[in-house]
Length: 472
Ligand code: PLP
Image (cartoon, rainbow, N blue to C red; front, side, top):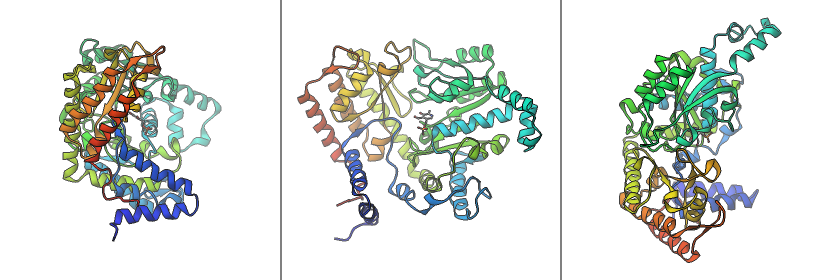
């Protein structure tokens, strides 16, 4: 039997690895088998294309390339320049941005680059000005002291964690929560939606240097035009972290007021969630911030990962194809079908539904904590993650919510009919699970978990993952 190119490529790679450390080759094969079998509803995960995966395993991994295209601290970067420039060009074209910086190793790193660029652009500091024009030797000890004091304690207004914001938007476990003076805006307790009047009020009172929008667990569209107006009214820089919904922006599902790129001063993203690229981050901005953004490495980033930039170029080229828009629309259609299926069966959803790729179930409606629900679903072959809900009574560890997302299952080809079946499986598990003697313990009949697991597998059988990849 003659093998197709993808099977040959992956089989050969595993054979070469197996000759050195067979346990790594086995683990890679096992990971594919596990991913093929699980009903992956983690909203932040996806399945990158074979071309994207293969672009990462090569000699680019051996190259140092600090600096940016044409301005490197290392010699011999001409091929890295090629892939970095290609990835940036695809990103600019895809998102309609004037500048793209494709080096960040992750979403958190992209946010650090953006924070640095905004601080450097906005903070009034004569010492920083001197440092920026590379007169660092002229800086006195007093200058350095002033510079540190002036960069610290700047104000950031971002979406609260329990309303769906991200840790990097000024929260304690992240450095942003330690270096910025942070306040947050939540959502309306009655509707679960962002209340723009309240955001404006908070901005007027707090006068942030940075207004941050973007989320990890908010199931609705955000109006970036209104938020930009609020930022402008108080002189704040408007930053949007579109890590979760970048694929929906790329696929033109979010346009007009809901596309952050024309409205924000700076946009950050991951490349591996709904955008379906390699694990990594990216920053988009206008010309005013471009120079500072390009200083990301070595300012806050380690050496670029040229092999990942090559994979970003491949994935972004894929996202520019017309079929990506269809994919992005199907992500949302699937999320809405899932939300409807759950609601019809009696589940309580935060905001009552979704406009994007994710659904947040308030599992207190089933008498469970998020932790209990997450584990019970996992026992039943359904991979989700627990998440806080607004004003969560169970805190950030146990939580009261389950976040589910459709980018991965949509990549696999599942559609609205399968989403209704998925809703049935989720509801069956949650309604048959009872709370145990602690917020982590629960009771679920193993026979039922087994039955649902089998049903999940049957559902997936019609939609093979990486159908062209046969590892033998
Ligand atoms: N920003 C948002 C909104 C996210 O949801 C996440 C990850 O979940 C990140 C940033 C961090 O991305 P990474 O894990 O790539 O650092």
